[in-house]
Length: 122
Image 1 (spheres, helix red, strand yellow):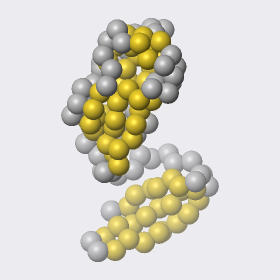
Image 2 (image 1 turned 180 degrees about the horizontal axis):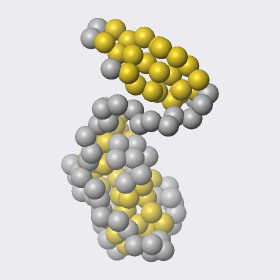
Image 3 (image 1 turned 120 degrees about the vertical axis):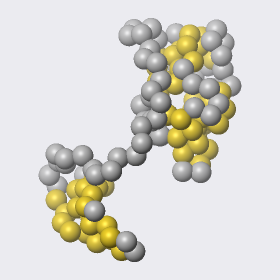
Image 4 (image 1 turned 30 degrees about the vertical axis):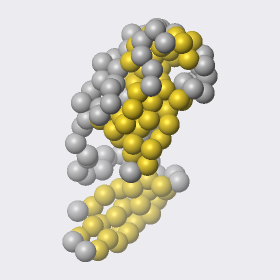
């Protein structure tokens, strides 16, 4: 199978066969075709209403290990509001601003994609 991988602004066309992988070509041109065989989609989280506050989004795909806030709870910028596990690493998700948590869209065990809205702080 062939894949196009973008790394540091360069596109690498990689051919993968059982037991080996080789780079077919390298270019600086933008990728026009999606990579073959995308990962299965996670369950979509409900969309947050526009203009309702600061959205906290997942920086990468993973699984929510813990949620330490609930709706109505005040938070300060930098407070850890949840922990996201990605590639066996625990990533602390911090509040981007001070305010009150107005919505929480995930719970422990939720699977999320990159840029999934996790919570909203008003």
